[in-house]
Image (cartoon, rainbow, N blue to C red; front, side, top):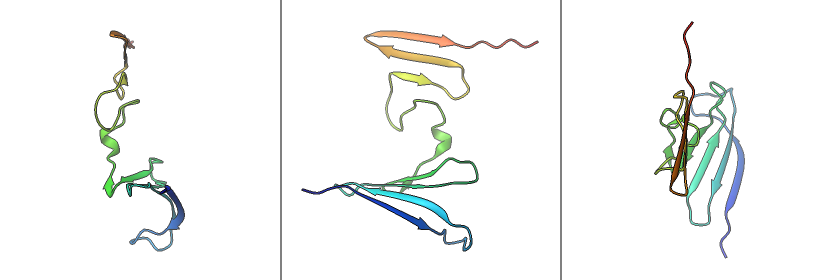
Length: 99
């Protein structure tokens, strides 16, 4: 039986010699990998899945999956919550008034 492996280590970026970053890497039993590195600049971790870096600007919306559709969506700064379940759709929006 193969088991997944979790590797915890501290690494230094190649171009920074004095500023350590915390890195966690997970390797599954099938060989897929997920690596998270702390990013002190904006607190969004650097995510690398199977060697491909995650682009945060494509996934700011809450509940948004990396691929496909989801039954719950809340667009980034759009103010509309949408829930699809049991063949029904619920949608609610926040309306702002300028004074």
